[in-house]
Length: 258
Length: 253
Image 1 (cartoon, chains in turn orange, cyan):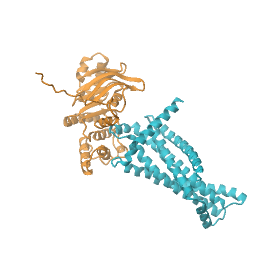
Image 2 (cartoon, chains in turn brown, green):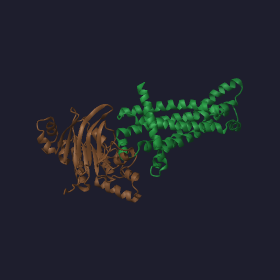
Image 3 (cartoon, helix red, strand yellow):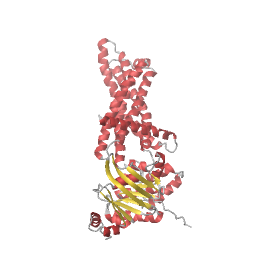
Image 4 (spheres, chains in turn purple, blue):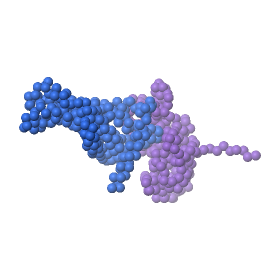
C-alpha cells in the first residue's frame, strides 16, 4: 500500500514568469520555488530587475506572463480582494524604510495593527514596544522618521513589517546606503528573526557579503540574458561557476566567505 | 494628442479609485479623523490670515474702482451693490480658491509625489491600504469644510474693504452702507458663492492629488507635479466658475 507523502507547499513559487514595463521585457522564463523557512537572496548587477521582480512577487505589479504563487495561492489569477488579503499577509521592508513622515516611529509600527487588529490601545502599545525591541529601537518610539539615521529607518520599517507577524518577509536592498557595520547588524537581525519566527525570508541585494552571511540559497539574475542564470547555495555557486560571469560577480564582491 | 487622451484616461481611473474608496468614510476603522483635522488646520485655519488680508484689499481695490466710475454718473450708492454681489458671488470664492491652490493643491501634489519617491505608496499597498482612500478622502473632506468657511470669512473681509472706501471716499454713513448691503444681498448670493467654493474644493483636491499620484518617481517629478497641480487647478476652477455662473444665471441666482 502506498503511504501518502506529505507535500510541502512552497512559500513562494514562480512559474514561467515574464516581467517588464508596458511591452519592454525585463526578465523572462523565470521558474523557481522557495521553501518555507528558507532565506533566499536574489542578486545580480544593478539594473538587472531584482527589485522589479520583488515588486511583482509581492503583488505591486502585474506580470506580462506566468504565475506567482504565495503559499500555493496565485497572486496573479485571483480577485482584487483576495490579492489585497494576500499582500497584507506579507511583511515587506523597502530600501529607505518607507515610513510615513507625519507619524512617529511607534505610530508607524502601530499603523497595521490599527488597520487590521481588534487589539485595545494598551495591547497595541505593548506589541509595538515588543517589535521595536526586536529591532533595537525601543527608545526611539517617540522620534519622527526625519530624526532617524538611514539604518534606523530601515529597522523601524522592519518593525512595522513584523507587527502583524507575517511568515513571509521581503527585503528590498536592506544594505543599500548603509556602512559595513550597520549592514552586518541588519544581516544579524535577519538571521535572528528567522531563528525566532521561522519565517521565510527573501532578500534582494547586490551586497555579496550579505548573501554569503545570511543566504541559504542565492538566485542570480542576468541583465543580458534577462533571466535566472544560477540557483544554489552561495558557496557552491562560487565553486560551480568559477571562471564564468556568475563566478566573476561572486568573487569580485563577496570577500569574507570565500 | 495621444498623450492628452492617455492623461484623461488616467484621470478617469483616478476618479474611479477615489469614488471606489468613498465608502471608507462611513466605516469606523477607516475614518481618518487625525488626517482630517490636520488638513483642516493647514488648509483652513492657517490660510485664514492671508485670506482675510487679500480679500479685504480686494474689496478696497474694487471699492476705489467702483467709486470712480459710479461718481461719474452720480450713482455712488450702487457701489455697495457692486461690492456685495461681486465679492459674494464671484471674487470671494475665487480668491479663496486661488490661495487654496497655491497653499493646498501644490502641497498635496508634492506630498503624494514625495511619498511615491520614498515608496510609501507601495508600503501602503502592500499593507492592503488603498492609497486613494487613505490619502485623498481626508484631504477632500477637510477642503470641503474649510473652503466654504474661508469663503464666508473672505466675503466679510471683502465687504469690509469696500465699506472702508465707501465711508471714507464716498462719505456714505456706515449704517447706510450696512443697511444697503443687507437689503440687496439675498441668501441666493451667499449660497451661490458657497456652492462654488465647495466645487472648487473638490477640483483643487482632485487635481493636486492626481498630479501627485501621476508624478514620475524622482525629485524633479515631484516639482513638476506640484507645478502641474497649480496650473490644472486654476484651469479647472476658472472653467467650473464659468459653467456655474451660467447655471446660476438660468435659475435666477
